[in-house]
Length: 272
Figure 1 (cartoon, one colour):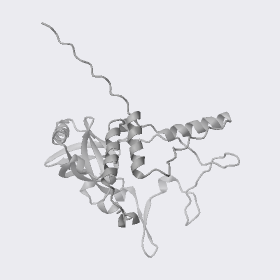
Figure 2 (spheres, rainbow, N blue to C red; figure 1 turned 135 degrees about the vertical axis):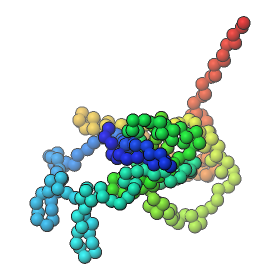
Figure 3 (spheres, rainbow, N blue to C red; figure 1 turned 90 degrees about the horizontal axis):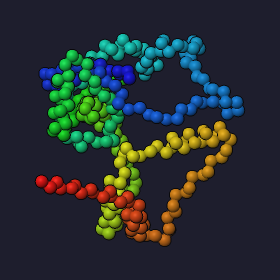
Figure 4 (cartoon, one colour; figure 1 turned 90 degrees about the vertical axis):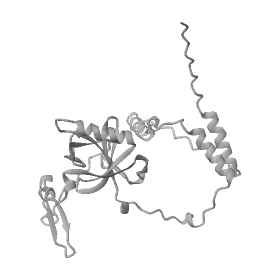
């Protein structure tokens, strides 16, 4: 893995040198854009609109266009001179309960690797967060943007979770909210029973990416020159069912499909 940022975590008067590594990676079936008729790969060229010449990637910078059309060119050296303390330090601003972070604001995650000769301060912060059930609220400038973030202990390391700014989260404005009908007590009780019945039957780590598996099967079928069997249609709902009846049947089906709990082995008592 390649470090994407190097700096320090500023924890009060304590500075903890760290480097950040991407904590996640996506596993997708890779495709290329090709010409339908002959399968030839489609290529794109970086062409300058001013002179029509193709530009090598190393000669490309970022530009900010002014209202009059003039463009201000900004290089990597310019960005390195930004007057931001967060470009080199992750400053701890405060602490909050771990479950208080709104999931919709979560963005990218990075592992924090201590780089100093002594990891004592790093371990101290990690253990303090673990014992108190808190996350550290911080700010960091990363990949050309300053972001709020939280530091959270996981699997023995500190993880930096970038957050969206509050004004980057859209407000839900949907028409149904104006005239929604509250559920009846019996319907709510049945829905809660369904939730309780399926609670603990599936963990996030048990979920399988069936879409990627289906894509690979499609490619293999294309190579072999065969057709895939169509996926079975979802079970059709009986239009005569009321909401309450559909819920009742859902609970019954969930109870039938729920795996039986493993029997608890009784420990044998030792006779002295």
